Amino acid sequence: MSTFAVIREAGPAWRDGGIYEQPGVAEHATFMNALAEQDFVLFGGPLAGTEDGRVRVLLIMNAKSEAEIEHRLADDPWAPTEQLLTVSIEPWKILVGAELLANSQTT
Image (cartoon, helix red, strand yellow):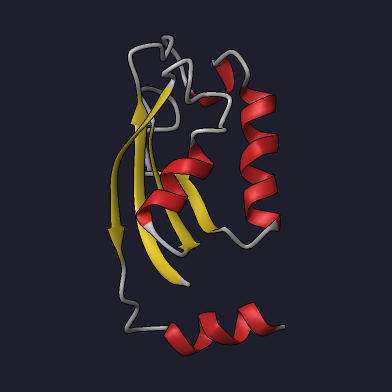
């Protein structure tokens, strides 16, 4: 497994308002929480100041490949509606705090 930094942002179907005003927010939250429970999403959330408007989200993900991330995120209820678009998936080499993260994943 490798660690990836993923950026997702509001797509063309994003409605005026923040995250909690979007249709299907409960289903999206359930989906993302399930990915976190599976240790596929390690950390995630809106970049500061974007949660009340056109959101930009940073996800730190644990995956075999970019293709796996694309495949799994395609099941997000907000993906087919284009409320959220994945704009970048980049391998991330953790230098500071890597040992702390490794220890948290084994406990």
